[in-house]
Picture 1: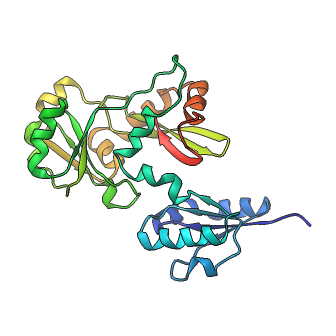
Picture 2 (picture 1 turned 90 degrees about the vertical axis):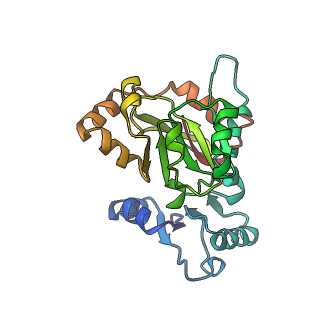
Length: 266
């Protein structure tokens, strides 16, 4: 009898609606995989057995349950293990990973300049002391997939800082034109997959001079709709070339990267 695998998933309702489609469930079942929703109203440890748990939740109660489950079931694969992704939940420590990568001299990987803001009273001094250039993106410090972590603002000039409604602490990161496309890299064990995703549109010098001081948004699509048609976004996505596979593989497999089952962006 063929082995079957029981995989539990714990996702926000919106992600369940997007990803857990009948076609996926049927395909998984054909390949010996039963995808089972984790009941968040019941203790996780009482819902065994699982061969694997896939989750995208970050509230403290869930994390505590997950850690307790892992301690009792060390052989169950958890994607992602809370300890493995803890540093990725802070927009300060997630970028520190880049400086720790063990890359060959031929490979260059840089991060935008950013400043950590503890208080709104210090925001102007922080920008001045670090020499941050506009435009900048104001982002909540915590990046845990929650709705609040996606509340951001594109700040075009110093006057726009006065209109920020983010609660500190947050980060201000220099905006770098990148063609309206990002490359998202998924790493699962030895499997590496790079895909394209839409991003913030480029900002020209002309636009920077006449733009509003501040543009708040919760989703990238809100900004692209504000600035670009679906047709123009589609053309950008089609024209963008994926980074060389050798480069992606070296970054993903860097000894110091610490990525086991995670994702990152280029």
